[in-house]
Length: 425
Image (cartoon, rainbow, N blue to C red; front, side, top):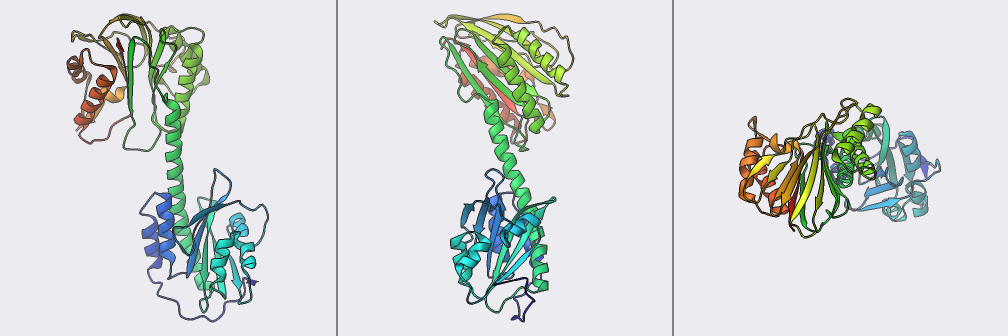
């Protein structure tokens, strides 16, 4: 076995004209990480190498993911070595390529010392004598993995072959890193959204409760809309809110807002006091993010005959009351968004729910849904709801969501959250 030995005479290579263009086209057509890996492996064989494998760092486990080899669909994970051994470890640490030549007398153990996977080593040793070129995948200043290429008898890596492999690895690295970031953002978004919404709504005696959440479809960012329901059956606290902006910063404020309200509720469950506590927290921390919030405290009778509601708003759309007889009205409650300025006084409104009545809370993604620059609007929502007087909470939420989506007719929309509570189970 020799490392970086001089280039030897080799048989003419297959045509490589246009290979870089082909690889660039193949790997930049997808942001799916697994598909991008397969496209890289498929594109480089057999023109660039007889055998190819990708080694990708796994930031979650600290190990390495191995993809390809004799079967492009193969994948496995190995621990990343802490030694500075030549070969794969060396390339991952330095980003510089390594060329290792295994002669006819080399064993699988010799290859395993370089690759760290016995089954992969057996595949490579089957090509003896074989050149193994390991090229770093470097993108945005970091080495995220390595492209491992092998050429069998008569095909050796000369200086031109190494330079070509490095150019192609650079193209592949950017595409793989973009796909990795996209995948991680998707996983982060999903994980954050799971924490922003209660997994299961409570089923209070004497009340009906339902919710809907539909994230925006035109981006992958974490939305700022949230809802929460806490408390015993006879003293529910319902919160619907919207943090300005998108992304990780807004998600952090969303989590903070939700937790601040939950914590404050242990000491005082009045909606106006909860909004006051949230406003103080956000203003003191100078987050430069404001939150619109609607808080409702619902205390119902176990038999479902009536429920007392106190509601307070911080810059949020007011809730809508749907009476059992079909009368619909928007509750008159206003207030400054939380996090804008200190010392805001929030004033609550009180309403009484009778059997069959409903209270609908929602974020501005509902009334501000746009089609051809025209808003869905509060008037359309108020006109829709009388037909659902006396209906269950889930029916009301479903009807509103469906009507908004039909109005949009496939156009992009903002995040939408809905919570409905009805008197009488």
